Image (tube, rainbow, N blue to C red; front, side, top):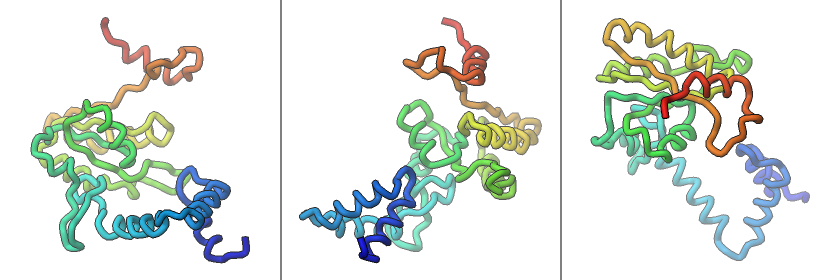
Length: 206
């Protein structure tokens, strides 16, 4: 394909997570060969995303705004039925959505946006710790650390624990960590040692 326009679209699509060059080419060819106005509708919808979606000013979740000067506040932070005393800290918006699908968390959230990762040049100063601390000052009594059980996730959890210890002594803040163990339907023989150890440590009475 010698079309520079097609090559540019393929290059842009291949920058999306999980989309390789072949998949990007398949998407691009479908968009230009389908008889439906899919390409125009998609372009218009993407433009609207840029105009009307912003990070929430409170928790950094995705918020929709009607006008450019509106303060972005997401549906969760504007829900008065939420428990303001409980705050769940996650790494990404994807993690927030995964927890919301379960329906077991009725508190608020705070999205870090990234994890502590020295190899990638992400140190403590790159995380919005100051904004998190200001959020905790607003009547939060429990912080649930819901970073993933990876090396970077554990390092971030330890950093958060260290930063929040002052509030434990001053305000009686409770810091908890989500449990990790054998997934439902999984076989024990395939569980790694860390997962198995946590499953045993987090055992409950039946």
